[in-house]
Length: 412
Image (cartoon, rainbow, N blue to C red; front, side):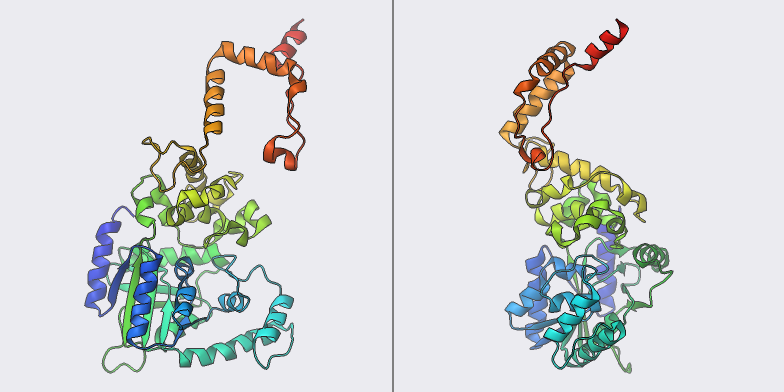
């Protein structure tokens, strides 16, 4: 990560030498515009997609549909949520929130000629029959990238269903899209990362398919796309990179381990977060993509129990970053403390005044003794309505005696 700028330049140079066309996008709008330009040039009407969270991040499907181009998900989980008109609720298992009964009813309602069945194998075969036709009909295949190797100009994709290999091989044009942080220096660095990713994501020692793409079809080869394009997306990642503490956020390999162990995510599910990336990783990466002003509540929707940091295979200090984002949300935008886009969004005049008084009282012994005396004697004046706290809890009321008073009574 420390060498990211240099590695990105090396990656672009080697990909270009391999015949891959590299595009840079500052935000989601630019990324979609690049893909649309490619599609319009070849008069594409259908795009088949492998699993790509970055394409979800930029709203790729909606942008293409607005331009009259069909974008069809080929990952089984993504296909299910697309049929349902929903977003993924997990970065590895998009349809984990659905039961087989719900999927059976969805297929019966949305797939022509299909009758209701709860047989899982039958449901998989139904999806397979639909997808097989789509692979053959597609003008463009789109994929994500798990790791991009700067040394060789290679795009690494891992999967279990084979749809990623179909998307990147059958259509005449392959468009890959990824964040700028997914670069590793050498090919020999990939196997340890593959082991970490698959074990942390699904408990496998290795995925079923490991695809390595280093260019378009060469003369004499029987398959592969005629063109390969790579879109390198920033979308707030350089903001995280510029900060020594927040830079660790970009180490994420999208395994989903933090979500699988998070007690908050387990209770509320991914859709409650309202962002592309839910769970602990979403809470720390979404502020850079969408702005802290739109996402700061996510940093507070955590128990700081540390389960996410403990299981993270690349050792991102998620809880430390959550605390940092909480401080940023409360920071004064006019000071050097505010370094992120949207810093100070949670700051209010009333809260600032309350915490200023609190800091004065708790930093001076005499003031603290006097304030605690008044609170214990005036406990009857405590308000019965205390904002969000009393929506599900009893009001907070000071104790009739302070701890120091209780200790005095004990000594007496």
